[in-house]
Image (cartoon, rainbow, N blue to C red; front, side):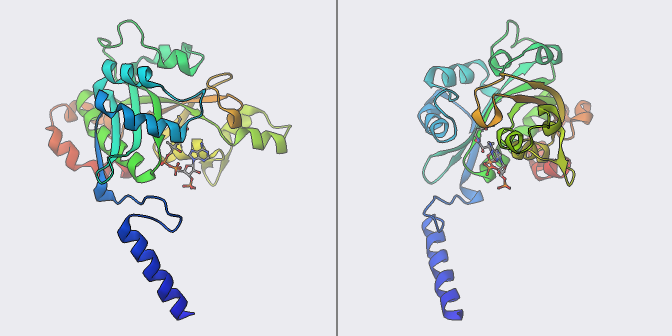
Amino acid sequence: MQKLLKNRTCEDSNLWQQGHDVQGHDVVHDSEINVRFLSPADIPSLLELEQKKWTDDQRADVSTLASRIAEFPALSVGAFCTRTGTALASLFMKPTRHELMRQCPTWADCARKQHGDESARTGTLFGISLSSVDPKAANAIFEFFWPYALKHGWSDVYLGSPVPGLRGWLSKNPDISVAQYVRSKRQGLPLDPQLRYYFKKGFRKIVAIRDNYFPHEPSLDVGVLILGKVPLSGLSFIWKRVPLPWLQRMKKLFFLCL
Ligand SMILES: CC(C)(COP(=O)(O)OP(=O)(O)OC[C@H]1O[C@@H](n2cnc3c(N)ncnc32)[C@H](O)[C@@H]1OP(=O)(O)O)[C@@H](O)C(=O)NCCC(=O)NCCS
């Protein structure tokens, strides 16, 4: 048994050194993740990421990615593997206003560029899209962005989350309403896996439940508009005066403040 374990450990450590896990998937170490604002040159890698994470009717094409980056380059962030250049995660946002978020019925309405978006004096963002193949990369994106958000005065972020557990749950519990499912918790955390994911990232307020929000079969096209606070943004009058590198040094603190 010990021999078996020893062989297994050696095998795993060889795979680790080669940058692969036991299933042969690429393993990316923390030190190999580079997060930065996106440029048009990143579009081919971003398309590969879209291909991995979204279906045909959901994914962004070249022109959509190009316009997101062109419109709000300081709100378009990507995490890349420094060894392979592969895009591991991306986050696209845009400025918005609370009243607009409450009025827009679908993801397309929320994501659409509105007249005056660039000049709007608002502390509110809408997360157009988050894609990730590696949880470390998704975390690194948030760590990277929070200092910029504090410096700029962004304090609120809306997201429209799918609820991928909905279809399965309703098929087993036909008497339960969509709203009951969305608000259901187990051990203090949302029942739905994706709402749980965002809850852990600080997106805890359910603002609205929208039918026909976004094509997503397991969610029966339902989207849940959720709101998160940028960590520590209650002290924004201080952060605007603090140099960015100081805020960047605080990055590990942000997750503790969620
Ligand atoms: C949602 C997403 C960005 C999370 O990426 P990540 O940080 O790399 O994390 P993972 O994909 O490993 O998911 C982390 C956890 O959340 C859960 N989760 C998140 N999204 C989920 C989904 N759509 N269905 C089921 N579980 C989901 C996972 O089960 C996992 O739980 P575990 O930690 O218990 O295993 C990524 O799964 C993705 O790109 N999904 C497709 C696109 C999407 O839905 N984007 C968000 C739209 S608002």
